[in-house]
Image 1 (cartoon, one colour):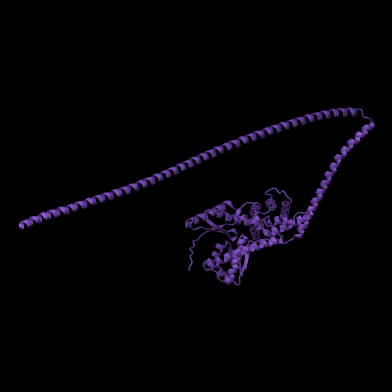
Image 2 (cartoon, rainbow, N blue to C red):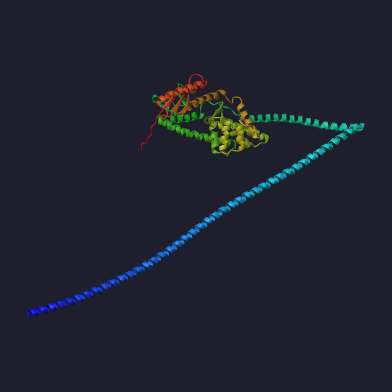
Amino acid sequence: MVALWIALAGVAGIVLGGVVAWFVIKNRANSSVQLAEKRISEATTQAQSIKESAKREAESAKKEALISAREEAMQLKQKQEKEDARRKNELNNLESRIIQREESLDRRNDSLNSREENLQIAQAEIDARNAELDSMLATQQDELERISSLTAQEAHDELIARIKEESVAEEAQILHEAEARIRSTAERKAREIISVAIQRSASDQAGELTVTSVHIPSDDLKGRIIGREGRNIRTFEQISGVSLVIDDTPETVILSSFDPVRRETARVALENLIADGRIHPARIEEMYKKAEKLVHDRVMEAGEQAAFEMGIHDLKPELIETLGALKYRSSYGQNVLQHSVQVAELAGLIASEIGFDETLAKRAGLLHDIGKATSQEVGGSHALIGADLAKKVNERPEVIHAIQAHHGDIEPNSVLDMLVMAADAISAARPGARRESAEAYIKRLEQLEEISNSHKGVEKTYAMQAGREIHVMVQPEEISDADSVVLAHDIAKEIESSMDYPGEVRVVVIRESRALDVAK
């Protein structure tokens, strides 16, 4: 029985296992079908997406190809337009050249026609003159035949006619003699005009000196001016280029220099130092710079005053400054600014006597010597230098020409030129107006400085002690101590070979280095 139950249980288990197995297999089959259907659906969806993407890409490629084709067509069109424009331009140029050639041929044709017409006219004139000559020859032959058969009365009448012709020649001679008398009268009148101008402009002449005396309150100041071991006087002479002569003359210090502007600046600086009481190298340099500005202001004032006195109010500032600088210049001992003012007065007076423009004559006379203010630095004729200065400030052309011509550097060609030349000669020729020796002395000192300045490394040079000594300031970075000795020797030898001078000339080469800093 037990075995039966066990057998039944086994059979039931087998049956139950088969049922379970059947259900499991069925479920798995259903799952596989569902999975396949899902995969088919996904594949369908993916295929649809790929199809749509391919369609979009095809449309995009189609659009890009269309755009590219359009751009290529546009480029071809532009290229063709440029080529058409170039060809059109070439055709236009060719057409222009053809037109020009046609015009040139027309002009040549017209010229040839004109020449032909002129030749025909000239031939006609020649024919007419030949005919006229033939007629005159026939007339002369008839006249000779007539004269040979004249009666007494007819011969008398012929003689009277010839006498009339001779009287015409005598009349011409009379006119020539009258012209000579008028010219003589004009010369006498001109001399009278010049005499009146000289008398009306009479003024004293003061000779220019090359030394200036400076009064000091007491002789004790001389030691302070000299300074310890002479450092103050050396500094003053180096900065100013003026010699200080301190001798036994009571309460007096003498400044010596051929350059009046330099000497005046030194005088102002020294007087200010004496008034200040503090005399040392730094103060000397400071006072000298102030003196330079003061002298410059005086130069401007002198130029303005001279222009004002002559009634000239439109001079450029450059000309006024140059004109004022003439206050400290001299020519053969004659002050150049005073000379210029006098020439302006004389030119104006003469112009008023002959009916010329008085203001213009004064202007040319006042400016005729402005070149002397810079002739030392520039070199050359002061008349041409002055004309160049006037040109730079757009002065009137007639005034510029008068400045150039007043010493004959160019040919005078106007009344104004002659007026300035005459006034300049009158002012310079007055008794006591000029001194030759002073001018020669100044030229010698200028030549000394020029010889020294021509050497390399020389910064500036001052002629001192009336030309018996020159101080040569050199650039320390270019000239060494050993080079200074050689430089002094070379300058001395050049002076010996190229100049004539009394006594001897001492050459002093000064090499100085300065270091500057500021404490704040």
